[in-house]
Length: 373
View 1: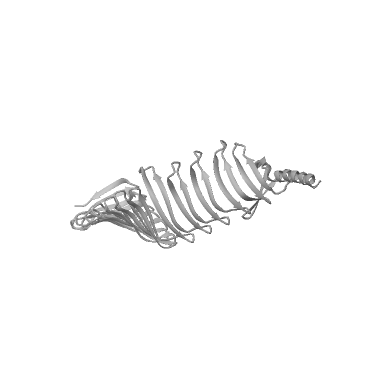
View 2 (view 1 turned 90 degrees about the vertical axis):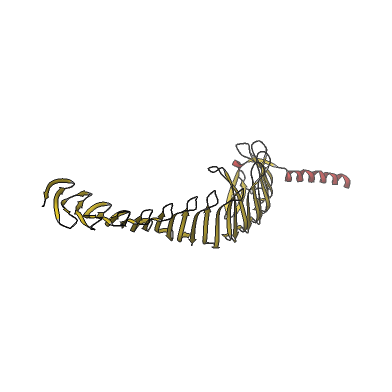
């Protein structure tokens, strides 16, 4: 009698156990996702109850996932598949938090990415692969913060090159000596951190010669930045103050200064000087909000003798204009401009400074002329 009753009990126990572990088939449309901060609870749309047990949940595309829940939280395996049934990813969860290694796959079955978590936080080494299985990225985390050596393998289609990047982090902040090299070992860029916000950055031409060197303080450009041609010739020198240009120098290929222009709040403002390749000043003046303003002087390029002194306002000739005889160094002609055109009486002098002619203009049009013996 006992044997018969025991068999009946075992039969019902098997039926009950099977119903408890049987996988439930549903779709994401029938699942309600509720988020409370970093906690996510999944419930059934039909009975409003938290999901429990093993589920196969589909998407409209045919992709689906095998997920195990406990009291509405993912607990156990989470494996996703694409519409063709190929495994897309697999991970393990404990009480709603991802734990340990997570792996994602390409459609060809090769690993695309391996990531690691601890108590739901990024922790450990992350590795990303291309479709051929080559590592293209490695990352290291500690309690959800970047920590340790990072590497990247990047393609540069413009130059048809592969760039290998090495970075270092500590407690989420950049640190140390960062490098970017071609796969043949040539250095393209390096960044040297003195602290997370201050660093020196250098970049290089394909021939290995330096292309740019600048200093950053508090994450802003500060100090002198220098730019060079592939031949190693200084091309520009820019002085920055908190990301704003203070002045900019340009150089000729022979290394002599070509121009020096002042800036204020990112716009040309202040004195300007220009030189020829022999180092002789040929022009000087002042800018106000990118426009020539005040008296601008020009000089001839052999001995630097003055040619003219012209008055500007808002980028146009306005006011007194004087032209000089470079040999006698005396005024050869003088008069006034109005909106870029000669206006009023213009006087002409001989090298001894004697007046020899007067011309009268009206907004650029000559209306009279008088000569003196």
